[in-house]
Length: 134
Image (cartoon, rainbow, N blue to C red):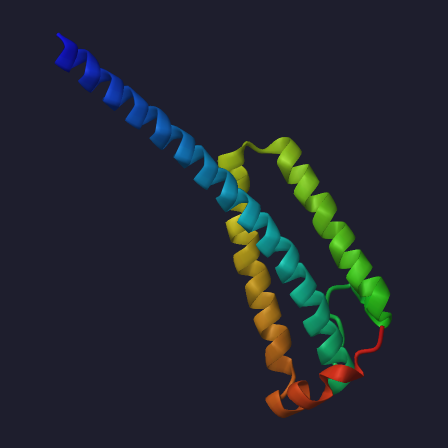
């Protein structure tokens, strides 16, 4: 009888610990997705500024275009919109849905950043990054 009770206790504790670890891992994953979302938005703003400054490219998004004329305005706009979007998503979605949406948004943003970086020839991007004035 003691063997069965001891075995049951070990199984119960193992399940409890695995559930706790799983919830910690899931919370960490969501935190990392949020950090990636903000980092990619910042990378989008900086790569847009770089393309505009170095190659005289134009911001194609008509909503963002007025803010792209000033470096600080564009960064403030991107960070503000990112914060608002994240808060709206957090309020209206459960954690699993939020993770799914953030994964998709992060993928989309990574393609935008890739396109922005592709607009600037490597030599100019490397040598002229300092020209972006704040």
